[in-house]
Image: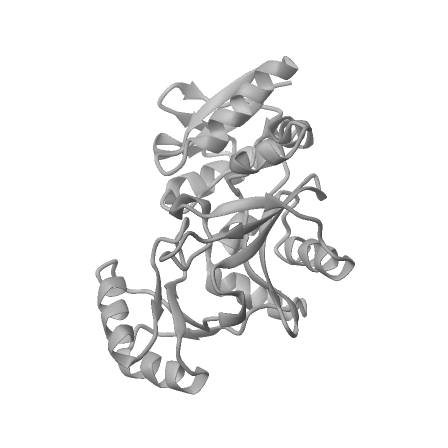
Length: 286
């Protein structure tokens, strides 16, 4: 029994936490280098997965990120055929693409923040923002920890935001209303093995308006209502994820999904829980 844990240049907290937890549980780990991961396909269909350290062989695959590693998409797809994985590659790709995730959530009738998906056309985005009503939030379909997300209070701010986002190249633009009644506050719920393991309320540190921990937000442990619990499980199921971080807004009209992450950083939530969250993830991945 060996757990494959994929490392990437964007975030080390989760892989480090899972490797340490596997050590405490006596589970052997095969560390996987995402940037060098590749799949080999032989003439008769045999497949192999290798990275800079050589062949990758494992019985379990820990939750992983994929954005930015196109070759790893195929390699992990191969690995997931022979190793247990909470999240299929297709589910991870859906969660990585906020536009695709919004469409899938809509198909599953999961309540979410209003979302308009636009081509990167300044006039069209401006027209959509005017229809929604300022302030609005504009973001690229991919990104994490608040990257590639901008708030626009008026048309001039929108023009500036689009100019900044355009520097990253072409792609779809997501436009959403800023839910001012929830300004700077969100709920993060983490599931693993399909079971809820941690929930916190996150509150931004002014003048920051995004409630992500990487941006300095504070958090406290809370409980979900029955409606929120159903919404969290429904969102993860809609994307086919056994392990997920679901961000909610508590609006006057009821809870709404803001975002779903296939490999959330749960490590900042650990101080609020006696149970070892990383060990729970390791157990669910084997």
